[in-house]
Length: 240
Image (tube, rainbow, N blue to C red; front, side):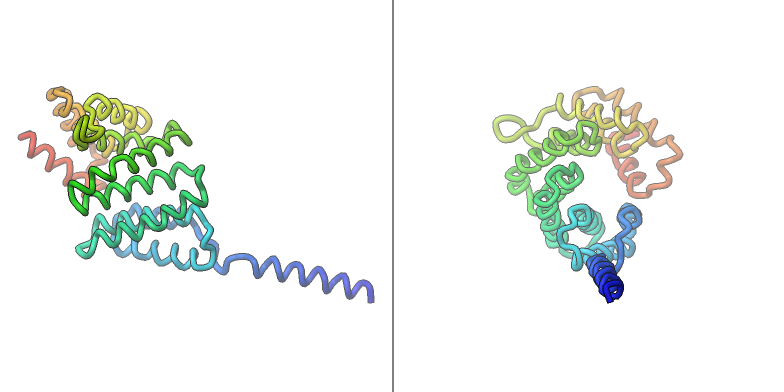
């Protein structure tokens, strides 16, 4: 009798533990691979997986910022209402920074989405969003001083924003942040391209053009048609 009671208690405990588990465990690496494929169908598949998972585990901070990232990638490649897509992504990253405030990824993707929303709404909105965007990037770097993408975006922000007193635009900071991003990830072609632009922005035209030509000759460039197009557009603008 006593043994039967113990077995029943063990069975109940195991069953309770199993019921507490998600029906499908989320493979974060797989989801991220779908997102960075830059293929719209794959990105939409990632979003479907994330939203199904978040329906079961709405407090999963990593899944939340991944959802924000997915919506940013989708918004960059949609012909529809880009603002709505970016705002949906920001809703996820807002929740992520609340639930996992020590995650540099959460703050970084929040910053990126703030920037996209500002760009989509227009110049005046962009100016108002510079400060919250920079604050989120600064927070990401407080949490991880080697978080290279944050330096990359800060470089763009310092380069594109108007200078004092309107905003934070700063040529020197644009260059220093681009250099730091490339220092941390020297093989990243997007970071190299931003460094070339920051060099040009600082009057270092020869260095900028030499670097762009190095990027153009890199065999890895052919693997990413989007970056290839961006590099060729920059080369055309500089008449190379």
